[in-house]
Length: 80
Image 1 (tube, rainbow, N blue to C red):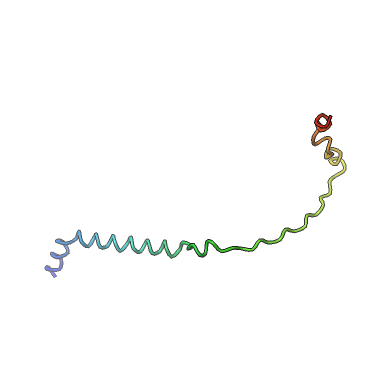
Image 2: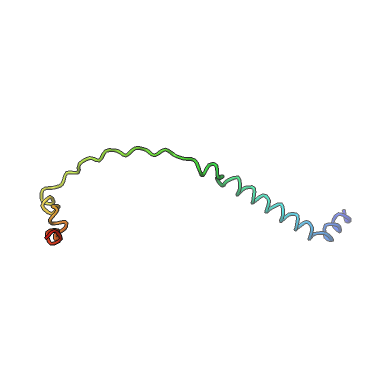
């Protein structure tokens, strides 16, 4: 038992280096396993067709302010 402890004390640097390499390899494997690959990124997803828009009903008091002349009051000056 004393020889095993003496061996570990003499060579603890090697055990640290090997342990760090194994830990980094494990982290790299876990990251690679959880990231999507290029084949999955380039998949084409079909576009869903747009729904027809429903006409929005406006309150009569607001309807007065939605005319073309109110939206662009200088339109007559541009055409003159």
